[in-house]
Amino acid sequence: MKQRIIWGLLAGAAFVALLLAGGWFYAATLVFLALLGFNEYTKMNGHTWNEPASLLGYAGVLLFVLPWKLMGVDSPSAITVLWILAFLLLAVTVFTKNKITIDGASLMLLGALYVGYGFSSMYAVRDLELHGIFWSFLIITCNVASDAGAYFVGRSMGKHKLWPSISPNKTIEGAVGGVVLSIIAALVFAICAPHIIETFNALLIGLIVAVAGQLGDLIQSAYKRVRNIKDSGSILPGHGGVLDRFDSWIIVFPLLILTDLLPT
Image (spheres, one colour):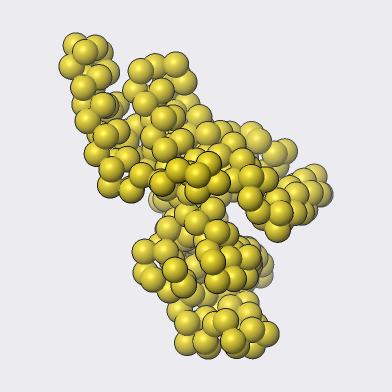
């Protein structure tokens, strides 16, 4: 546990510094994490990085997450990236004479969307013209608060299992604790910056971050259980892989963008 806490604090401090720096520093970090995350995804599914479908998946992730604006290029729309990637993956099934099946192609399409759009949304929030740093810190703080609330309330008061077939250690009491602490964190932001966020919006964001974030965690747990693995990777001692650490974030950031709760 001590090692886990130390590495977590060091990694968290480094990530915050890169977030504050913004620009290429933050963009390059997210590109790197997205590629590592997709590499974990391919390995979880029993594929190697140099297979044709995997390479197309990596290309799809890059199309999502590259900082096109910083490069002075208009970014392709998400639907454009998805359609082109789907077309190429389907074509590969033909050219390989079904050595790469429709199932394998579908997995790579899903992974590119899940990982690529998830990390690209984190950059999109940081790059908002109106208070991008504020919104990024709000979402991250609520997510951390949700995790902390779920962990400590679950350990101290948890009696009823939330979803034992998926994640046996999570409890209903812990989930509620995570929601409550996330909402409190969001309200603190609203109190400190009422000119940026209204109280009602803060309540909604705190609730969405907690519920969607915990669901993102369960999604990853369910996937690992299907593949019979403990962690998606081993990027940090005691913390597993990129997908283990960012499973909530790559669900929450896109969802908040799609709900129009953030200024655009």
